[in-house]
Length: 467
Ligand code: 5AD
Ligand code: SF4
Image (cartoon, rainbow, N blue to C red; front, side):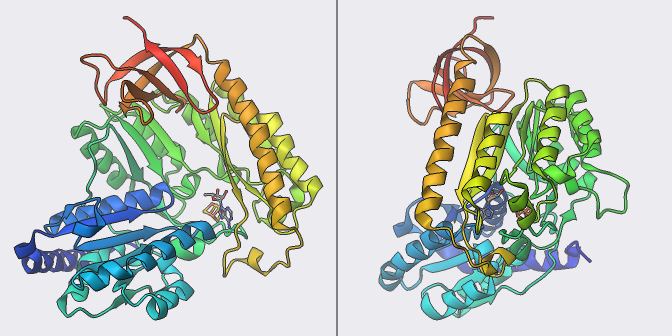
């Protein structure tokens, strides 16, 4: 059974009560630090939700935390090194305050070799659990607190769906809602299918119920989340696909904007493109990772499309939605990528002209097929290619942003600008950020109209349009 039983969830609620009683005398504080993608952010909302039920409040300060929990990412080595560095540095704090509980969970923890490393080399970490044990957090925390023993829960699994885990949200006007978990694609460079399990979809009524609850709390923008949202419904008994789900969300009163992430180019159907174009609340934005331009590399990556098919897909999407904002992910330096292969990636950048690009230097992930390839390309060469890619894309992003000058957009106000206290910031339907001067009566969650009067490579500024 993929869905965790009500009985198991009740058991967790009991553990939750026990932790609450056990800790009540201290008014416990927790610090949850999240690395990686939106899925991890979403999991951290569940972790905080469970902690809040257990009587914890939250702090940003390590010195006053009773629990420090790292929710980790395994997609690239850099993120893992940072976490190891940070937990390593906590050894002094643990010595100073032995009652401090340090934990590590998420994708890094789900890898057997990493759990072993923590067990043997980071002895001050006393709670380690993988992605599949998330819903058992109350029980695991209880056991770790009970007699100060170290608790590890990282068994391998195809993955489960745990509904009704409490969520702690920040009161943003935007929220992410998971529609499915896991991935079946096994791109040869990627660790995700190994740490997140197989594709499994939530029941549509669960997704819709969650969204209605969010709307009741004042949320107006919903982002549907999954490693490969276009595979939604394939594993459900009900005859439903992602296009159907989009239409259902589109008909929920109070929802004003809908986005989704991530789409695999091989799974985007004509039905989905039509649904996107027809649903008035689905925003003109699509994140469509192409990873590499060379057909040879795409094959080695096990991506199941070639460059021509990708470009044709972009053409079909733009035919129905000419103003759509397109973004992508790119990996530079896949093992034995040649200079000619890399030129094909640049060719796709120039042909599509993405609004923005998330680019990464290939990172070897233990246990994936690509890690077995004897790579002849030097790091220096990979960095040179990476810099060149940034240069090309920065020019394109700048040109696209410059073309926004003088245009008027509806923005959802997201809060104060991070760089200027006198400005507010919001997003256009396409997902672009525009900063504009604060004005009395305008607050986070409002929808306003702004005309662009200044353009940069990564952001736009504007002034409120008087209605
Ligand atoms: N090395 C570098 N980048 C990777 N990604 C996934 N695995 C790796 C890896 N081993 C990138 C892909 C993916 C994004 C989330 O992370 O571009 O789309
Ligand atoms: Fe990783 Fe590929 Fe699945 Fe994306 S589609 S999560 S890159 S295996």
